[in-house]
Length: 89
Image 1 (cartoon, one colour):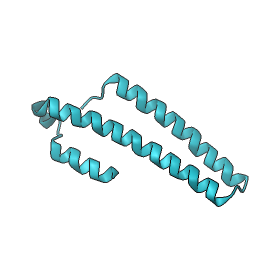
Image 2: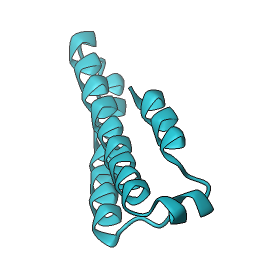
Image 3: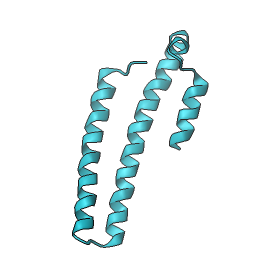
Image 4: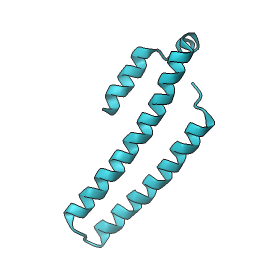
């Protein structure tokens, strides 16, 4: 399954931001910042990464619903999408 270019672009932008968040968390650790602040940033980065997964999953689900035979040929069906969804939730 190939993702639409706008989905790829959006996810790459999100991942770039997440990299910045991770760098910030590392810096916070080095600066011995308060645990609550660090955990807050880890939670935000985790949520952002989950959003990338859900964004990709929604695109895949649309593909499967719009093109069930093509999705099956690519090795994806709605049951596979359901399993992936449950992994993210």
